[in-house]
Image (cartoon, rainbow, N blue to C red; front, side):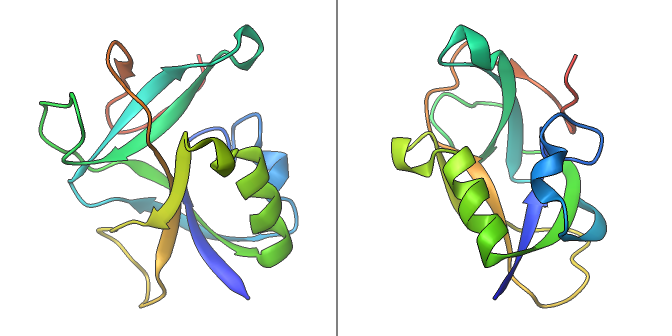
Amino acid sequence: MITRLFVYGTLKSDQSNHYRLTGQRYIGIAHTTTDYRLFEIEGRFETLGTYPGLVKLPYPNVTDKGISIQGELWDVDDECLDKLNAYEDLDSGEYVIEEVSLIDKPDDIPVMSYLYRWDIRGMHDCGTSWTFQ
């Protein structure tokens, strides 16, 4: 089975974990609807550094209005998705994989993404796009 995946952070083409999408099919640039915010998360461990977290509004402690977030669409096979789910550590509850809404959706295929679930108080709002500094 193939899953259509919206990536917005370290999995994007120009980022450090893009290699995890090797062999998968790139669809193109995409934008969420305007009910999301993107935050730079301080890693749980020093070795993790900072990384992005996408939240769907309403979300606790977010008072700003939602905006459209830019990312990439990829079609990933089950093996790749299983590895990505392990990498995103879904068992910890920090992220979940859920359907997201896009402005420029190319077809009727549902689009999934990793949404952040922990507290974002004190985290930097990234605006419409995240790039590792």
